[in-house]
Length: 291
Image (cartoon, rainbow, N blue to C red; front, side):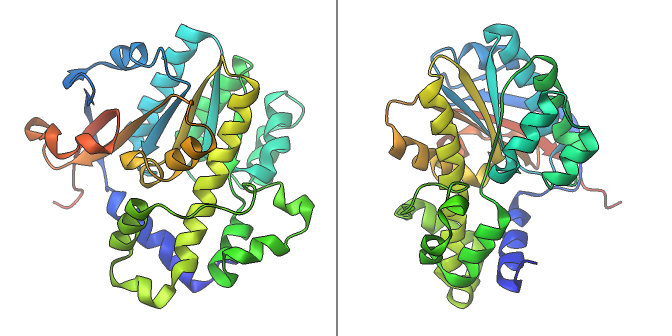
């Protein structure tokens, strides 16, 4: 069971990026061409890209619909596109593979991989498409038990794990030096950093480093394949977090990222306020459920 600090951390980290409900309309903007584009334009713009990172708000139904559409368009264009997901943990890779190969049932897969509660509605369509098209799906995230351990005992505690356990996380030592990312993290945590300490930030770095490592491992063996990676947008906004960790592994990896979020008024969006977030911006309009 997660300790109180980590539970608090997860709630606070997700809170700024949550919206109660959203309209079906959206807009896409390329920060490189400085113009609004379509999904097909976006896919055409990643021809020379090795890894396309989609930064989502986890409860954003519009984002999940668009992820499926983008993945479909990528498959239509390139035939082979690996799907990498924060939503599955590395120790579930074998189980996920068994499901994709048709050996086990979906209910066994979702139970044994500890699939997220919104898997059936939001992520299942992409996994099912990957299964149908015989595509690889990477279980990219660090197991929660090790993230929890870092939050309680510190980053150095990972070195005490058995070698068999360490294979489920990024190789040690994990680099935590990213001043801009740390400042963003402190801002999200508000005034609570002094009480919860650096362990929580280091736990975040374990997530990022492990996802980056998993992507890198696949890219290294399949350099001609595209990788479509999904994670919460805090992990990839400003090309920090997971993207920084991935670039540290190999600067030659060509990465573009999408930041997807809701705004108060879709018709009055000021793109210039968000251009530093990534290569592409996808926005929808916030709609409150309050009468």
